Amino acid sequence: MQETKTAVVVSERSRPNELKLVDPRLVDIDGSRARLKAGQCRQCKAYSFPRADVCASCLSEDVADVFLSEEGKLYSFSTIYKGPPGWIVPYTLGYVDLPEGVRVLANLDIPQEQLGVDLKVRLGFKAIAKDADGSPLQTYVFRE
Amino acid sequence: MRSVYAIGTGIIPFGKYPDKSLADIVWPTVKEAIIEANIGREAIDAVFFGTAFGGLLAGQRSLRMLGISGLPIINVENACSSGSSALRLGWMSVACGCHDVVLVVGADKLTKLGGGPLPLERDDCEVTQGLVMPAVYAMRARRYMHDYGLTREQLAEVSVKARKHGALNANAQIRTPVTIEEVMASRLIADPFTLLHCCPTGDGAATVILASEEVARRHSATLVRVAGSEVTSGVYTNGYRDMTWAELTARGAKHVYEMAGIGSGDIDVAEIHDAFTIAELMYYEAFGFCERGQGYELLHSGETSLGGKIVVNPSGGLLSRGHPVGATGVAQAVEIVRQLSGRSGRHQVEDAKVGLTHATGGGIAGFDHGACSVHIFSR
Image (cartoon, rainbow over all chains, first blue to last red; front, side):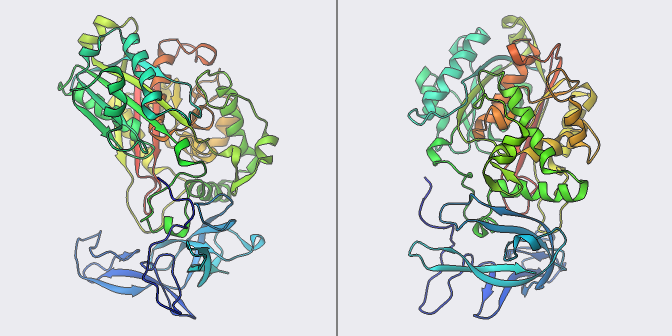
């Protein structure tokens, strides 16, 4: 039932020289910069992350594409030593609170000794897993 | 609504049965419950079968082993609350008068998954970033430690208590006591959790037979009533949430206390969802056994250990009895029904009259947990 070799990946048609993303629904990475893809309801202004086609607050389908703030505050974190199959361990996850009122789960690229609750963090990107062919998979991360 | 009674229970020792099928581990529990209930197979009106990883038609596959077929069989999936959700549905069907006798089964075989953290829904936006259940609870623990000054050593005491109880329970998966030092020294899983902060993976099955009062009075010596039954779900938000407070469980507890007409002080024994050490402390608070931030003080006082005022997880809980996801809610019900009938042997809670079961879980983005089920039993 469970695949044992591949990382948890939402597939993306790969083109030569293009960065492969772990979950392209969540992030745009253009080579030098990562941006978190969200939705904002044009009627009630509520945010959706991941972007949804319908607003969970008012049911409007008039949703704008927006990018979320790149700076936030670390609510909590954990370094994981036993991950899903294919995942490179250890890795550190945390919940980052963004000024829009959205909380985002993210990989953290922060040394153990710097990790702390309420740390101010900034968005970036990094290869964090490998696909079935061994190619690196990029995703957004937060750094100090 | 009619009163509903638990008239039969069955369980197998939880553990690893890699060579047995799901049906192989289910049927002995069903047969045990039928014998205990002192009813014939033909008296069963319907089956509610809770399983998270059991696959299609797990109930039909399991019950044909005992020739139980041709009746309504509903398979129920609600993550870690699958078995307890089946219990709730069984309760509803008897309470509303649809059925007089129903079989409630909870079962899962995690050995077929190959160990490690439970596989979560791959489409989930947090799972694609590497989220696993130990990390969810570990982040709760980290924040709780920050907000309330809880230490790793104090957290380890939860596991020590669970293993002390589990050592007395013949049906527990892990039956050896541990020390704080051993918990601290086991290998890291998700900081601050070491392996011994986490429930083991394994296989298990349990059955409870529910019946109307009329049937129960005809068949049972000790009447154990299901005085409250609740299933609810988490409140979705992609915004900020206080991860040190188990909102979903607190809401479920409030509903079920009102339904049963009791308060937290009336409970003698509780089986709660200690999937990871921090969970037990947070749930003490959510159930009103103590104030917020006081979970460790309650644990350390000994009042939640055997011999205490409100004994929590005399079976060893998820940490020691084990947590084959869908089996857990029904195994908890088996434990509490036997506790209230004075049949728990070495881990018996003295003169237990009111008991509680609680299974919650399911890691998906935007929820405290996906589902939560709470039941109250009384005699």
